Amino acid sequence: MSSIGIIKETGDGSATIYLPDLDETYHSIHGALQESNHVFIKEGLDFVLAESKQELIRVFEVGFGTGLNAVLFSEMAHILQQKIYFESIEKYPIDINLINQLKPFQKVDSNFSFVHEIAWEEKKSINSYFDLKKIKADLLEYNFSNEAYFDLILMDAFAPDKQAEMWSLEIFSKLFQSLKPGGILVTYSAKGDVKRAMRESGFVVKRIDGPPGKKHMLRAQKPNNETI
Ligand SMILES: C[S@@+](CC[C@H](N)C(=O)[O-])C[C@H]1O[C@@H](n2cnc3c(N)ncnc32)[C@H](O)[C@@H]1O
Image (cartoon, rainbow, N blue to C red):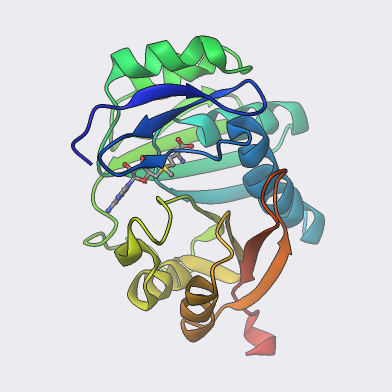
């Protein structure tokens, strides 16, 4: 992950970053914005809210990266007047100069800079409904301070064929423990190995329609106590 990122325009006109050394982009080349909206907002946040109304939704993201998901969730919190606490882990923060080059390509508002400017490890209010805490750490070594705490996990690591260690049984078991019973994990990957690791760690996994350009994605649920 040492290579310099290159800005790339994706299929929906929004931009992403390409890492030549890893030969990997931060988002789908078919559309960065449309992928995040489909996988994480529609199949993640909207699904959780449709299942049960809650005063506060706690979200954990694997891979803060460009901050696109944090920005989209902050906008949704404001629009829906839904309180959201969003925690995001990142091992390799992106240089702010690269983020500033990315910004003009995104069809999202000014919060884009703000989510990058706030300090790591501190909870900050982005708007009256949205609190963000960025954690600069390696998920492989990270220990969650609370079990059964999050309602929703956004699994947005680099693809399993580029970073297999992020999609292991050990990692999914850790994420499983951090979710409340009934909590949801969503990811853009629909790989068989990923599905198996999720199931082995206790999730009930469903393969569902993916964003444009991608056939499938996965949504996994931690069973409710009553159904275990
Ligand atoms: C596919 S990118 C997505 C990032 C982000 N969600 C976005 O929309 O831009 C994956 C992210 O995971 C981060 N990452 C890779 N290995 C990690 C690790 N061991 N712990 C925490 N983050 C990691 C990468 O640096 C990268 O920012």
